[in-house]
Length: 280
Image (cartoon, rainbow, N blue to C red; front, top):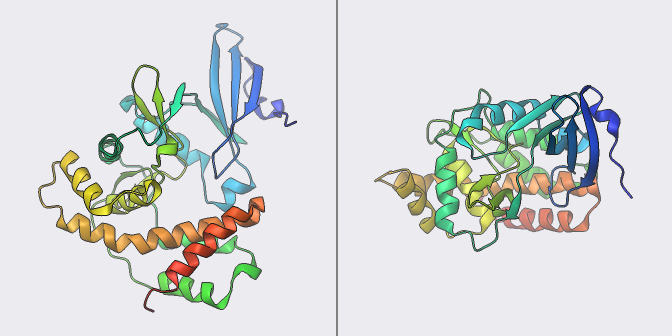
C-alpha cells in the first residue's frame, strides 16, 4: 500500500494533512489527492499533489512553469487554481467532477482549444526540436536502433518555419484532461506541458490526442476563432502531423524505460514504424 510522505509538506507550517490517496491516470507523473486543514481558519481543502520526480525531469516538466501559467490564467476559470509551489512539488485545486468522455462534443472540445489560445501568453515557449533532444537524452541506448537514429536526425536537422504568432498552448488537450463539473463547467487540467507556441501545432496535437478528423476539426476551430480563411490552418496542421507522431514516439520510448510498461514500448514501436515510411 502506497503512503504519502508528509514531510513533503513540511514548509506548510499551518496545514494539517487529513487524508491522501494516489490518483489513477496521469501518464507523466503519479499524483495524489490530499485533504488538508488550515490550522488558522479551520477550513478544509482538497488539493492535488503534482510531484517533482525523476519522471517529470525526464519529460522536461517544470512545476515552476506550471505554477506560473496557472497563476497567470487563473482569472479565466478554465483551469485549476494553483495553491502552493514547494521544493518537491506543486499543489493545485482539486476539480470535483467527471472526466470528459466521448459525449463531450467536438464543438465544445475545439471551443476550449480556441479559448486557450486567447489566454495570456506564457513567458517561455515550446521549442519542438529542443524538446525532442531532451527526450532523446533519456532514451536508453538499446532502443536507439539505426532506424530510430535515422528518424531522429531527419527531424532534428530540418528547418522549422513559424506558422502563426505564439499563443498560450496546452499541448495535451485530450478529453482525458477535461473535467466536467457538477455545475456544468468544463475545466482543463494537467498544464505541465503548457507554454507559448504555435497554435497550429497545439491544434494538431489535440486532433491526434482525440482521434479527430483533421479537416472538420480545423474548420470548426477556425469558426470559433472567427478565422475566415482556414486553408493556411489546414496546411499548417498537415505539416505538423508528422512532428506530433515524432514527439509522441520519443515520449513513449522515455515512458517505456521509466515505468517498464510494455504498452508504452508497443506504442513507441508503432509510431516508429509509421515514421519510417516518411521520405528522407
